[in-house]
Image 1: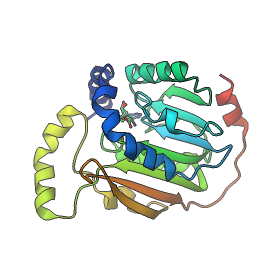
Image 2: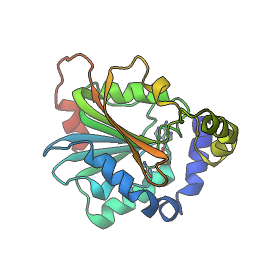
Image 3: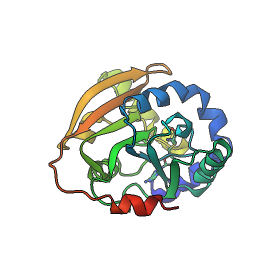
Image 4: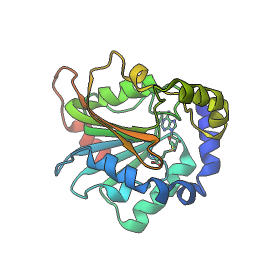
Length: 221
Ligand SMILES: C[S@@+](CC[C@H](N)C(=O)[O-])C[C@H]1O[C@@H](n2cnc3c(N)ncnc32)[C@H](O)[C@@H]1O
């Protein structure tokens, strides 16, 4: 899927996305946010925030930025922010493959049900690593293809159908993380059907200096 197709598909979904994917994935979103291990004052980036279903789950003593490619999805998120008074949350339309944030800006970065929808998942992960500080947490909630040969074959076969409805079913965790500086701390299977994984990682990239200036500028909205 290219980015044009992604925005087309998710623009169509935006009006009824919460109805289809809200309740059913609520617990896994909550578990993923829990695994960020957030502390008061932490800066969090949610990549592919969509309609913002996870936004009410973040502690209010953290600062949250959500980015997404698809304007109509973000419009739904903006409505939630207003309705729920989530003034610790800021949304921005942005391609996760080329983020407009400086290195090391965030304490934690999360992508829920996103890596299988982006055309270049490794490029997105590289950006997540770049903008996350050394020692920060990166959490991926996603389906990763199964080591089981039969299941893998089925997943490869149905992959074109999945692409048509907006995600790929054949993404491998090993190839996604290969040669990155991420250490997996936990890899949990979650419902529905234990089909999804929450992968909690620590960013082991080398330390270099980071300033607060850009964060302050971004939050003066
Ligand atoms: C399946 S939805 C997940 C939304 C939300 N995270 C959730 O838990 O419901 C995938 C989202 O990723 C966004 N997306 C896909 N490719 C993207 C990219 N390159 N940059 C930013 N967002 C992207 C889509 O627009 C869509 O809103």
